[in-house]
View: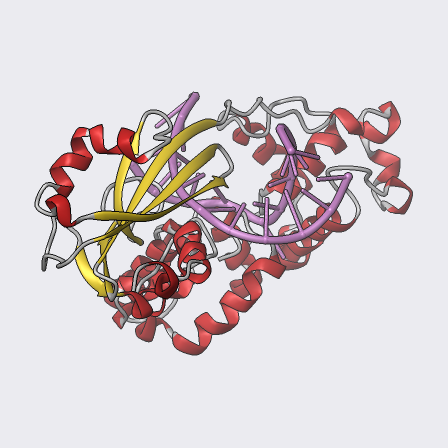
Length: 323
DNA sequence: AAGGCGTGGCT
DNA sequence: TAGCCAAGCCT
């Protein structure tokens, strides 16, 4: 749950999660939709699908007993080398060094290593160093200590070198180049995607669908979506869109645009320009492609929603605009 | 092996 | 503001 996530952000999710899923079998027996619902708003939703998948693996292949060997822990979906080493050392005292963002930064500075830490090929180099410095007799303590050192002392900006117990043997401290380490490959330029959500509603229900493709927000629910290559600025432009015409042809003149709003939603390497088009129709079909009608008041506590959809539902006043 | 995957806090 | 970062992993 805390992969790429701060404790402060994940803690309330963790607390709710373990109350609803107190053990592996409870989690394994739950539906993926419910696990995703518990994860709503935390991001990186593949983690939710993976932990659910892992619970089923443990139930079916490990007799509901969490595996205690490194290779078996590593085999679980969503558990990579870092998490396997962390869980293995903390829970079972297995002698495997953790290699996370903190450790990369420390090792890079401590040994003056300029290999880019976000390049997969560099992992071998840093793992070699980590193994040389590792204390297999005190695996858990060593791993906890080096991660705490990275979190509290050897921080990304303005590290507290004067408080660091490794100061005397640190390469970056002697060369005063800690500011240039670790080296990272420049991030890709952020691309923009244009999402046009059609809130097709009869005043009581709106059409919803589940995201099934291998893409952002997989498994979560959304309104009917038309993705375009560029901004669709006004309703007449939208009406010229072929996909829009196909989707809405059955409504004809009974369909009225009642409202629009636009937001910009920033992801790590995507900007989502999102338009919401509220379309009032007389009668909703039981099914429109993958979409089906849902009572508006029930959407948010029934389905797992992407943050922008949740925000829209919480903010938008349906009764004022469409009832 | 590079690219994709969320959200929120901090500067 | 815009950019960077946070207990990575999967494909």
